[in-house]
Figure: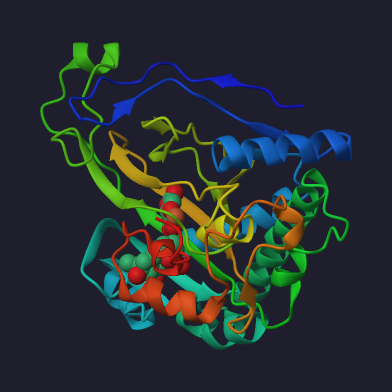
Length: 346
Ligand SMILES: C=C1C[C@]23C[C@@]1(O)CC[C@H]2[C@@]12CC[C@H](O)[C@@](C)(C(=O)O1)[C@H]2[C@@H]3C(=O)O
Ligand SMILES: O=C(O)CCC(=O)C(=O)O
Ligand SMILES: [Fe+2]
């Protein structure tokens, strides 16, 4: 069943882009399969984003991962620096990617496979075997969740082979990665008590009352599974032009449609633009993202079952590895799929 959680109208903004009230679609994975699959497809079409409850990832696995990451971020900068700079994997601070993007955060970016995790673990903990086993358990849990969701999507799209999407990421050569972001507390200068109580301050990023933690972008992979602590900041951009804040929920996961899923569904789903804006919190935000990607040599191409006889393909087929190369040559906010449009498309 999908339950709309009404979010109060948060803030007025002078920005051209509007900020509005919104109910995040919620998918309950303990629901009947046919209901859940229909709901997921609708959420992917309408928002490219939803929250999932009864997800099956054990609380203990999540709590252990959170503890390992928090321990690492609490170390002195001189120690953390030894695990960096992120290129793209490792420890990064303020710099995102290679093309000049900046954010008010530090992060860990890792390849989500057991061999790489065990090789890198010594940079992140004094107890590397615990760090790699905790990270492996977390990654296995969210990978399974991604596969469950992708199977439901295939069912919701009436595709006979329900593993058509999930097999891309369960393949042993999958190129998925795992990221933990840590945003420092941000206290706006000269807070006016009355303004704060009435929730009327400007939410546009980099106003004096907020700061860009992670600039607007879409994720390039197939799906992203995000979990955060209870500190807010995540916003998504809706099809009708609103930036809307997503209330954090440490017990559940948020799912984002990525660019590759947009291509795999021939534009029926669109990858969701999102960003993190730090707004008045004495506590730091910590978020963990699993980016579910296929193998570098896997083809990204919409299966024929997606299209009507009369529908033409918006994108030419491409290999994930070729797409990734373009992704890394561009800035965070760029629309990379445009480079793969069929020439007949405008
Ligand atoms: C600026 C960049 C960082 C990024 C690679 C890119 O060139 C453009 C996409 C960025 C992004 C966004 C989603 C994920 O956080 C990420 C790991 C990814 O796959 O694409 C990051 C890349 C990164 O931080 O390395
Ligand atoms: O930190 C967050 O909450 C979101 C970060 C994000 O979108 C990303 O790392 O791609
Ligand atoms: Fe993202």
